[in-house]
Length: 175
Length: 175
Length: 175
Image 1 (spheres, one colour):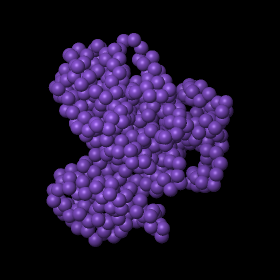
Image 2 (tube, each protein chain N blue to C red):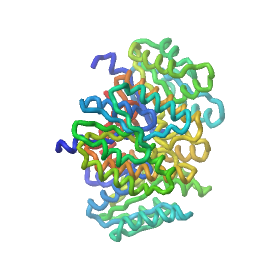
Image 3 (cartoon, each protein chain N blue to C red):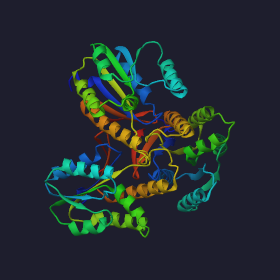
Image 4 (tube, rainbow over the protein chains, first blue to last red):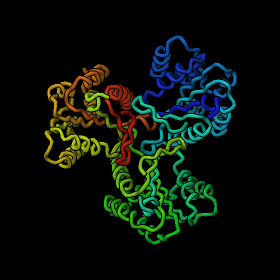
């Protein structure tokens, strides 16, 4: 496996699975200059509290970039050798895209996936697996599940390593 | 492991996990004459669109059999050496059985599982894991989850290979 | 790995995944005196039927202790070398704690996890993974998911072996 290949990692897991912590430790262990792209929008108190807790838990050795929509552009802008860029998380990014009526989610997903092998920075992408419960009653939730599943397949195909995290434990699916 | 045993495969995964694509590739790689049993009922436009997309994506080298209920009978009828029969998917079959008030789902599930080791064709069964979310509010969804989980256990016990698919990546659970 | 360490096991899985059966077989295979802590409360007919079915399926070679809340105390009381204590399941215990307004779930979870490495009995804990579906609409379900995920991480960090069970098949995550 080439040096280039080993630098992109996809971390998939459930809610409170420890996936963010695992991804942060991967970034720390890399020894690279750490950048964090937070895709979550603080649109209510519950969300604001979660974001603040996460930021506090990460400590001060990260540069945090809040970017709910223009993820691909931000990755290009931040790209540089010697850096690790952690994106947490793709499902919040998808949620934000779905709120923007004009966005073409399939095209945005494909553009993100296609960018990954061309970056010089180490990239770690975190996402929530949401497709293992009962089919949701409402159509928007079903569409969200579909978008997330398709995005996850594209990302997994374009990174060197994929981990599934449950109960804080990583299971290597690829790499 | 005997030749007979290695021919039956169960592919379990979430929504948009890539499980159908993975199963189709297993069938293609077998080099056998390909049959496809579609259990989904086109009862609304969303479902009709999903079925049409799947059929188009498979291309023309498959014989497709639409069979929402009589799955076990259809497998017996199609059974022949030199064939691979892909069933997509068991959760839609269960949904259809639940709509039929007279059906005994436990008995139907047991009959399907018991048939598998006696077939001469290679069989690939695809199903959705639906039991890894929050307990659903409504009783029918909980019953569906129970039926699906019990069926999956019976199928897994009666096939040679079981894969769990997430983000397009297979994880071998048995075989 | 020390003798002490190999005696604690965490079995995580979905609804009807076969996780309880797998855990019971681990206990039976241990050859130890078998104790069973049932955390479920028979608060309606559906639940009562599930509990009765489980109890019947286990047979008579178990001592059953019904304990919806004071799980940590009960584990301390039952602790003795030569015993295996199976707890089924942690998510029902969490549900019961959430019904008690006074309970501090984070503290209770931490106390349970911290106790595990100090016990002389073999301990097998069963729990439902509930975090792999769509984000639930209601806040209590989201809080439950968060509590469960955090508890699972703490338990997994404090036991010797962790299994994820799907379709009746165990996947070893740790140990």
